Length: 116
Image 1 (cartoon, helix red, strand yellow):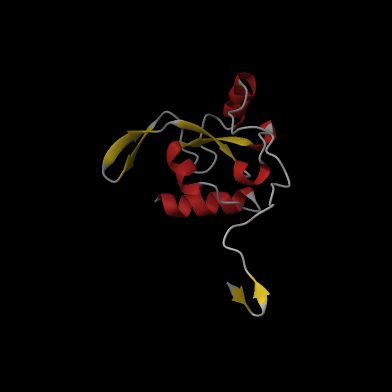
Image 2: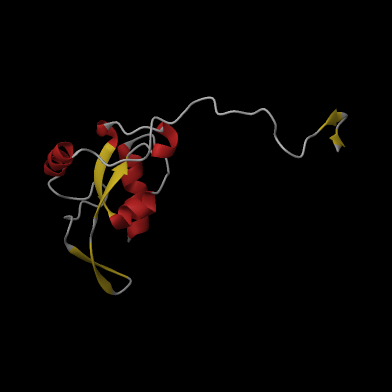
């Protein structure tokens, strides 16, 4: 099949990944995790609610679970530098997903606006 005077292909051939991943998505080390939780006062980086506490969501009480979030998503970095991890509740982590934000404030504003 041709378009605009040039040949097109149905299947890509000869393409290869230019950069390789530095591994798989991981969690921070235990010692760093403990220190990070202390720095954050055991609160979610985004909503500031105390982790392991209960919150109401859609009329139900839910115990917040700790999730380690990559501030810059793993999808972009393909690595796990410890400085990129923040402690987040499972609700905020799901809201943020793999979205990239230029600033931490931008991420916090986005998540908090959608959490309520």
